[in-house]
Amino acid sequence: MRIVQQFQEIAEIIKCRKSSFPRIAVVVSAMGTTTNELMDLARKVHPNPPKREQDMLISVGERVSIALLAMALDLLGIEAISFTGSQSGIITTEDHSEARIVEVRPYRLEKQLNEGKVVIIAGFQGVSRLGEITTLGRGGSDTSAVALAVALGARRVEFYKDVPGVGAKNPKKDPKTQIFPHLSFEKTLEIVGKGAEILHHRCLQLAQKHDIELEIRPFYEPDKVGTVISSMDKYAST
Image (spheres, rainbow, N blue to C red):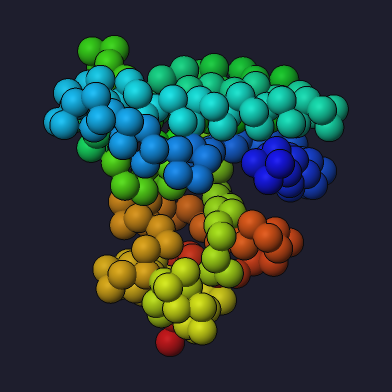
């Protein structure tokens, strides 16, 4: 079954990275078209579902992914523990389906990382200050990853995507597009604004603000760094 194989492949990547980095936090999204399927189901029940209940529903997709990945890692002998966005301390605004992260309190994550465990976090979701489950909208998992990197003091975030890197155009739509090995944040934001769609602008702006280097790696060739995005002058695109 392809889904099982994919979780096994992700677990193997994490195992390899664990040999180089003792503290690893992994942010995951829902599987494939899960979010769209849940939205379709919601609309069959209600043509305009209440946003609160919609968030309760679609946040399930990431919870499935984090639990399965933790199981796959356990099978490899790696201690891992999964957390929802709210359990991870991702505090957001009250705007259901389009919430913004306002604070991250990673106390539970820090404890598990200090014990040597891999922590697996559900991206795309958080909890409001009123205790409501919220989702972050488009690009939410990428933004979650950078926000957690800031809170945990990480200097780099690795994104494993189904594309070879950042190109002048979206590689999914134009496989022949030029892939840039190094980019500045400014240039990447310009490319994304023209429709490249690899990373969301909120994710890039947050990384730029906190000077966190981003790497885009193809999931199918994880040892290869497709694009490095950095504020350093030597990485600036010419």
